[in-house]
Image (tube, rainbow, N blue to C red; front, side, top):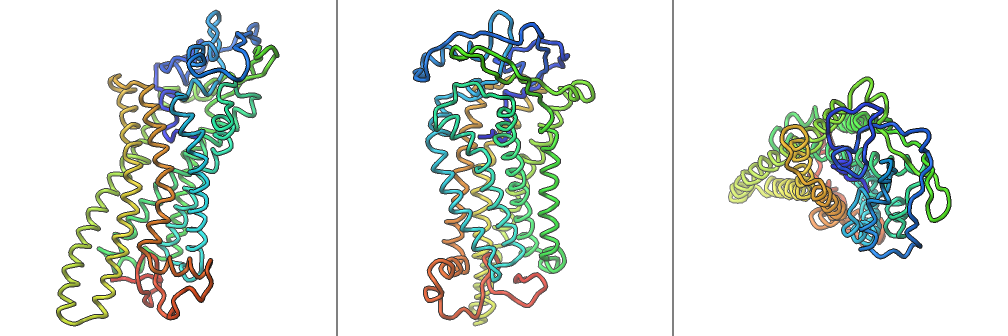
Length: 435
């Protein structure tokens, strides 16, 4: 599965290298540089390590040899060089398939419920977009994970070149794109709720369904443009080696010439990671924490006001305020779960930037293990939203019952519809309750 910060040591920033410079792809300091493959060495012979029943200790001892030939320093892409197997096998090979199934089921149910006409509100539209992106984040890399880790093909070199390109797209680029959209949609959700609670008059203008749809489209476009260069910044050259007694075409990884000639390796990767660490990880997390604090403070103030309304026997306003507070609390919980999984990724990414540009201190083997663990817990958090919606939203539960258990199981009195996010509806152009 994609490390959302792109397997940190794989693109470690380093001094510029010319296209003719040979690089050892097993050295984390040199990965990401381009180098020239001598034409008279396009076919290599590597030791035959026997059949597919290699035990893990022996395989670890020969992992370096499976990635690089000592005599001419020519390398090919092998996943074993990217992921420590003692963590990758149990997390990606055994646990991730179950998480994938649970995520697909739970997020499909969320999309199905929120797509109902009775649930069509601006905030529910954002929640539905988040569920779709979270689901796609785990669907894209699933075939590669199953093939490599669940079915035990991780030690085999990827071949042919088209397979290497497909693996890169579906296990790195597409998950990173979907995750970026999910991060920015979560930020849009928190901003939208802050407007509803703290600046209610602005909601009639800024929180309409057309504006929310346009905002979602802009977010998706920006995330695509951010990842667009990644489709072309690497070149996979065919390299014929001797594998298990027969010639096999594998992938020889080079940085694209346009990166060397027109941008420079340092500038390209520095720009990519700085943008990612600032605008995908750190700043969204900081803003979300701030908005959560502000919303919690506003909710406490509303609770005090509700007590006053209760003493004045203004039951209708008291009930509306209670429902709004419950909605605000639910969104605070959703954002908090997101932050618990996202902040560790932001921290490791920031450490990677500092270690690459300022002072070297990061152990990239340990950093990659941390990224694998944080990615796993990020996926683990995806199905939790379904439980939050079921536990904290009356209308979500009723709509779910109506879809799957029939109208008889739903409440008989359904004349007053409740939005998942804003309680009883009022006649506003946003279809949301504006306080």
